[in-house]
Image 1: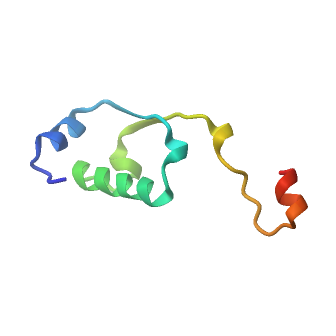
Image 2: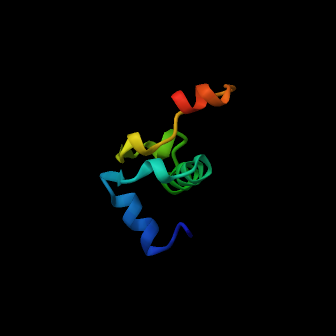
Length: 76
C-alpha cells in the first residue's frame, strides 16, 4: 500500500481498528500489518500506536505442545 493512497488516509484517520478472526492469521501476517501501520503512522510503537481490538474464537486454535508423545498431544 502506498502512503499516498486513499486506503492509507483512511487508516491514518481511524480511531480504532478491529481484527475479527485473528486466530486465523499467521504470525507473518500479523507482522506485515504491524510493519504497515508503523510505516503509515510514522510511529515505531506497536501497530503504529493505533488502538487495536482483536477478537475471534480462541478455542479453535490448537494447543502448543513443544515436544510430546502422541498420547500427550492427544490429551492436550
